[in-house]
Image (cartoon, rainbow, N blue to C red; front, side):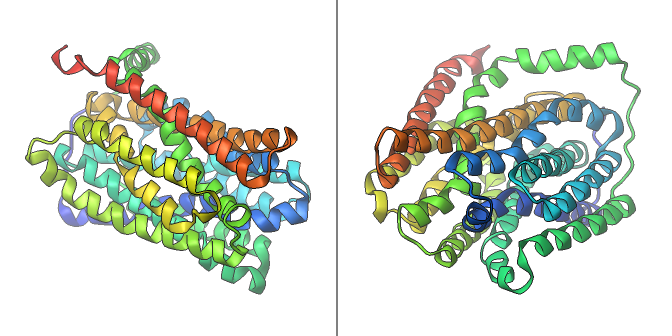
Length: 407
């Protein structure tokens, strides 16, 4: 597919519309961290239940990534995003009406399916409509929007809870999703591409998964990236309440400032990335030298235990920001005709990994408590297991890419 670079005004409008959809996706992704004390009390949830409930979003999200790649390459973001958001309305409404854990979980999975195109759709469009040197900036600024959604999922949601309750919050979100569908249909360009037969599409997907660079990022995407998202969207909240002794309101305020800081960080990161690239500093080098710093900050959280709060998680997430370079790096390593498939394949790794890590961290906490460990120690053990997995994922990535640039 040929690139069709859009004029700046049109590009800004498209970014705004896409950002609205991704904002809602992020809000729905992270809202369980703020609601976790309330949902745990109302539905008598264990740590494993809470991890599974939050992970249900990612399970639904991940299940659509491979078919989404085909759909986006064939039909484009306009048709696919607007169609999928209809499912999100159904899931959000069902969550608002749920009367049991099972109802919550099924609704959460539907929400994940419904918003599964809200990042991949835009990134596929940007791959065609934006110049190559601005791909990483567009990716970083979409992650800025992600942080904005996370910000609104924290203190604003906590302040709304006494006024309208969590069920009506989901009802309002469903109305916003409907408005975003209208904006998408009105302002996103139609997709123009050559016909692609099914056989060629199948071969294209195999090309992605056989690519050496893509394969080197699989553990990073699954465990490191997925675990980082799991902590940001869920486990930072329970740590602050159950380990550091925060009240639910203090935890929500802590999450607010964590995500507000990440919002600013992604804006700055997106702005300077093209400048860094021009200096000859590539994504690979930034990830290679940046990730060990994030591991040290996570280790400090684990050692600090009850003394580790919002500021420590902020530092951990800030030092993990280099992980976000992996996705645009994967996309740029393939031709534009494989934009949807390469992006959604890597996104599949992230969201399967997030589901595994959200649930897995909860299961390890419950198992540690079953073995007689205290609350604080159980959290420390669980986070340390995650740290070890990250370290080995990093070693695999570095060793696999030692000679990749020369091949």
